Image (tube, rainbow, N blue to C red; front, side, top):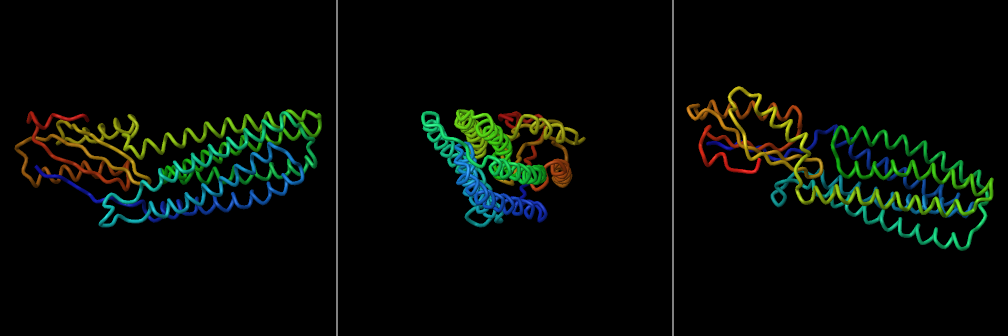
Length: 308
């Protein structure tokens, strides 16, 4: 028997560059929106606008963490970290969820106070203009992030994108709240929308934390991926069975290992060639993955044991 072991591979240069640009774009937008929303909040004194300002402040903190995490995750494996540094991404995503949850709690406190002490909205047109601008810029960012996630599978950027998609809804809700308060005198709408936004932010934080936890705990890839890998492997004419399929993701890296069973009469050279061909087939769909293939003679009882 012979094991095929490939060292952990990093995403290609284009994918790595896209991940870095996504973090730069996210941080730049967050900093710009902080200035714009802070000015609008001073003029309007809107608690719902304050909630989105706090959200942008945390966006900036989370995006900075993302930038550092992605740079670290893309660092090639070294002697102390033979499996790479990919888990820097879920650690960053877990930190993001903490920031996001903290912002939601702050908004809930502010909104609760405003319900008992309502205030009129001033300069509502300025607040609306800032929110419209935020929606346009945020939408452009989420489109770019979606492309990067599709290209790289980055968990940190996916978490960041999920947060910004939530921001689109938040910004739209702020516009509605300001219109109701400024034009119809419904001052209660401002804190109520702030509470609704805080609830959505908490849900977002939970989703991000759950995804980060799954990666840190080496959760298997989705069943669809495992089934796809099995179909690819079993399509090879020399492969008679497979077992012990194990998968996990670590930041931008994917790890796949399994045993294949072949005719015990094959020469070592022929078995080696077949394993190379199986590996190449899997890599067509999982580029950059670390793939470990162990070859067993078909029908050997101890080779059939496993959980895959």
